Length: 153
Length: 162
Figure 1 (cartoon, chains in turn cyan, orange):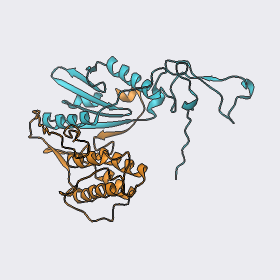
Figure 2 (tube, helix red, strand yellow; figure 1 turned 30 degrees about the horizontal axis):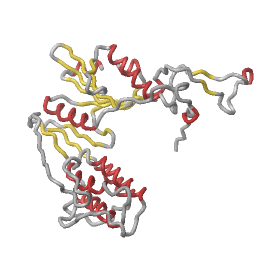
Figure 3 (tube, chains in turn yellow, purple; figure 1 turned 135 degrees about the vertical axis):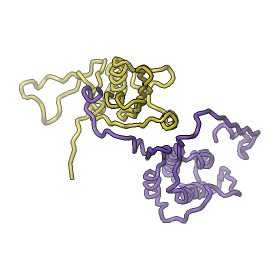
Figure 4 (tube, helix red, strand yellow; figure 1 turned 180 degrees about the horizontal axis):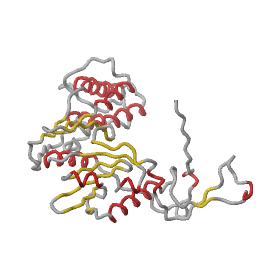
């Protein structure tokens, strides 16, 4: 048996407009994933998957959010101080959105293109070869027409 | 590239994604939700029931059944929601599930019977898989099945949801 502990933010005490703005994040439709499967087999490329560890911790949050010190773990020197978030934490209302924004920015910066219909599908063209990346929060499905594109991703 | 930027776990061929099991071969891609189906059977205590070869009886006609014995709405909704997720790979239960979903506002034991039959059908089809064949074309084919006042309860058209 392995016990796990997670540090969570109490999202229920977040105040609208002050602690968070927009909280929605796009997510892939299952139909899109089915089409990708069909497309992959008919075009003849293999699909791979990867899973992000602690995905939400990668998000950068836009708002100024503070949390009080954890009971039992207060710093005795600064009892009257609070923490300010520099990165997202699980339990924050905007964490999924912040994660999506981070991943999107990263993919776009590396030459992937997002079309206007499906905001969770990214494509990369490299000569005659192409790479498709479908993201579902922290799960990623990808496939490419050439093996070198797959391994470089 | 991704590994340098983020912490990753589990990389490899696509085999299991959101409860959908995938097997990629030269001839085609197989897709099914057998594990999810089995888990559902256990959750709703349907694993002991006898399998049947159709999702709904030909003679079933559902109505509101206002004077029938009520059942736990939470359980009914949970069953419908779980079955809806199964329609990702099982289009053959789409109609029946959507029909049963109409009665979520006030489910009766008569409705549960129909839902239970879907589970028995699932037991029958356990082991069936969808094949995306490598040789099939990618042409988009559309079908339509228009009807006029098909629903016996409120005379609405049902072709849009099924």
